[in-house]
Amino acid sequence: MPANGSVRSAPPVFIDSGPLTRCRHRLYLDTAYSSLQRLEPENPGVRQRREAAQAHREAIRAVLAAGLEGWTQIEASDARTAAERTMAACRRGAQWIWNAVLPAERDTGRRGRSELLMRDPAGVGYIPIIVVNHKVTDPGRGAVTTSFDHWAPTVDESRKVRSQLRDQLRLAHLHRMLEFEGLASPSALGGVIGFRAECILVHDLSTVFAEYDTRFEDRLAVARGEKFTVPSQVSECRSCSWWTDCRPQLAANRDVSLVASGMRAEVLRENGVYTIDELAEFTGPVPEDWPFGSFDDAVAAAMAWQSGVPLLRRTEKVTVRRADIEVDVDMESYQDHGAYLWGTLLTEAGGSPPVYRGFVTWDPLPTVDEGRSFAEFWRWLMGKRAEAAATGRTFAAYCYSRQAEDKWLLDSARRFADIPGVPSEAEIREFIDSEQWVDIYQAVSDQFICPNGKGLKKIAPVAGFEWRDDEAGGEASMGWYRDAVGYDAEPDHSQRQRLLIYNEDDVQATKVLREWMSDRAESEIPTLESLRVGPSA
Image (cartoon, rainbow, N blue to C red; front, side):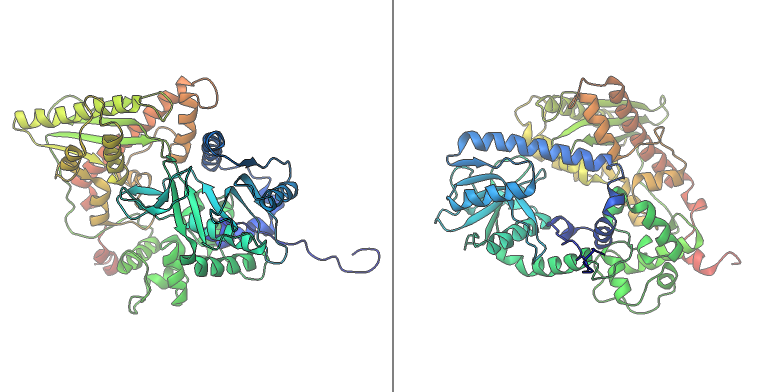
């Protein structure tokens, strides 16, 4: 207490738009125990994405600064000075303001910055434009876009919007801050420059203001300690430094989010189901607002968790497509920059031992050499397919969760259409729509209930497979790749070998899992019905 006897007021709490789409309990911990958080090392995957985003923003800044008239760039070592300089630029009517920082609002609790503020063409207020390192559009139609040098939003016949709620909420946050200063454009528009920076995607922010206002009020109350939060498992837990504290609490409480994470856990709690045991014994109707997935599967997953069973069979028989010539495929990409490695494992019935081959480029992405390695991969794969047909043998190629492979197969065909050997989109679609392209993830989903998740690294160990590298994983491989190609220093060739081993293990895991499903799964994994009946039966 101060010497004069007065009570010192708590420091104001400010939040930006980031927490609006993140875990509420994490926000509370980050705010209440910020001093402890600063002692934790930054998650490598988070650091890599942050550094890549910084590099992307700098590349966009350089292009825009060179081509736009009326450019102002805010330089300051602290947020208060940067905000003062941003407001001064706005008052003098600067056309483009880069690295804009808006004044923190003590009353509302908002703080925020925008990569770019553009003066409304009508001369009234500013439109926030953010720069992000992810895709904001896909091929299609219906997105509203404009060029960099001339603000004229129109419906784009070649692009559709890729849903990114976090971008829209950030723009709404910035618009509200501009409103607070009397500087918001009456158009209520915002812009996003995405990964490939081909245009500015324009959002009508009036469609998200209601959701923004609700979320902001809630998150600010959490940050101020006015709302109570508890741990709950969500997708971001795997990269959160607080997970080592939250996980034991959830396990001790047998929290329902361990088998039904995210929005499903929220719905269950709203219906009075808080623990795994309560879910396993649930006999009521399916909650009306159940968000996604099978509710019966969630109940079964809870029963499996109770019994310590890693998987449950849905059916008496487990089947998976097999062939005389089998090729396991696993692709490695780096963010949205491209696919630098197509790994394959060739297995021929009655032939020699399986052979791994990786089709790779070590030129840092993005690079046209990616097209060369992709063309070589495709020629080899189609060669094996043709060889099987010519010799009267069956053929199948396998992946685990085809969404990523399909995306990069089609995307590579589009981007490298002028490189010899690169197939057309039609050729890609003919193959991926055929029975010869088999998704083992789908086979697992159709025939097993997986209480601990369906990722390859969750399922393959049940079949007896272990990765050689204890750190193997998507997040870690991003850092290995940066070192392997020399983004930050001289290329590290040992990391190239590490990536190849990791990729080889991934295709080996798919093979082992497939063979286990064919040979042993029925005898090793119980059905849900047998679990209900119990061992005495």
